Image 1: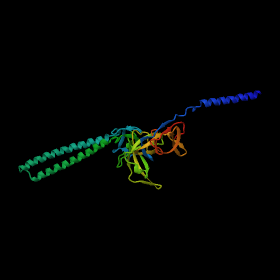
Image 2: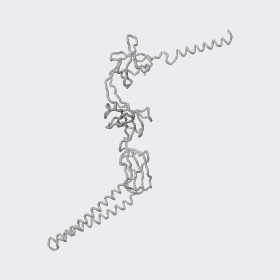
Image 3: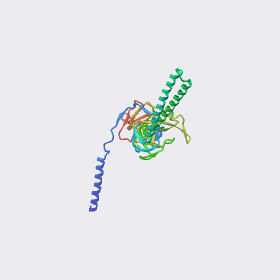
Image 4: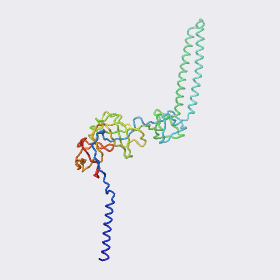
Length: 353
């Protein structure tokens, strides 16, 4: 044998040895999952309706806050994105001018109050004289009219003072709801002018302001009712599952491309800070619960579009085609093809769902 032939033979033997070693120690060698035999269980499974939806703000959840008095912004305590509690001070308007008006109005009330007191004393004096026939009845009538006029001026002065006092209260602007500041359109030192339409300089989106609005086909809407549990995911966080419950169903459908859909309003459970208005969602509405036969997911095999299982039959495997339903908690609903007495093989290395 030539030297070249000997080297070739050694190379072939090396390849064969390596292949044999790989076959013996391959990852799946001797590790096929053990076969176990189960009988279908009877469990409660949920029926559901699938829909698409959009995260939206609830009606009235967005509140625009402004000033009802004109003046310079003396203090501004919020920034975009900050959270604020109901009643907390958002801003203060310079109140010195209104305080001066209030002092003047209160002084006017005091002066007119003295006029009323004098008019009351004068009326009492004239009434005594009239009783003694020392003055005419017309004198009493004149003093009575003077007192009424003074009292009317006093009431007007008090109303004017109350208006100014209210304006003074408006210089402290408080949050009407708890929520997150969405926009701020003024700054400290800026002058704001009140008008019939209060100028907005802070917008607050209230806590728990979001809801999910799902569009449900008319063929499915009959099974949906207030209180139904809901799960959904959004494109921004596809791995996360959010939960909620149906709150109400629109009484009138919407026709789009000849298909009738109904808006279903869904309240979102728990904390949903990451959700934003206009996010789209894939929605599952649980409509009912029923008793059904289930087997472990690993028992369900697939041949193209056909689902089947293997039954234990005297030590042999017997194929049985099945119709499946809901999948939940590691189990698959069997709608047709099995009975509670069947013995189903699980495992053995077959390709499953």
